[in-house]
Length: 115
Length: 116
Image (cartoon, rainbow over all chains, first blue to last red; front, side):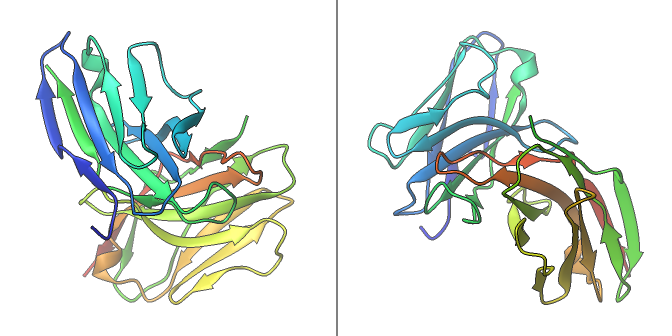
């Protein structure tokens, strides 16, 4: 596709369950970002990949959160033992490269609701 | 650490009028980049305009322009001839300049309503 694709667009899960959120970046984009956006707030950085490696995972809130990008394209954000506080929109973005003025293109996000 | 502040949680403007959204930031870096992103109800963030800190000339994109005051660490967005389709959340974002892909730091956003 032409843009960043995120699936599912909505996910409802029970507290304590495991969830995976998928991001398909724009073809050829080496940089990939995950953000979390709580209601009424700006996106909060989680993790950044350059190629297959996580160049910066300082935003992951705790060890329940983990993300992979094994082939340098699709990325999966994994959340274990979900808690109600994990409810948010999870945004993925990709860009051609990591630096400066390069535009980041965002997907439409996955709305995660933990009940 | 870098922070971005948007002091106007909500604003409204009449169609065809001009509105200015404010943004201030805090950083010890000298070389960085500033962005305004728009987020309509569809949730997809869309780039509106961007500015390099070392360029004194304010960026302009059609009806959108910025007033960048580096010394004051201010980066406001002016929307001229407002249209109904401009209704959205607007986020100011900051990014340092290095080769390690610093992430974007976003402000809390301003909800803009364009009234018919």
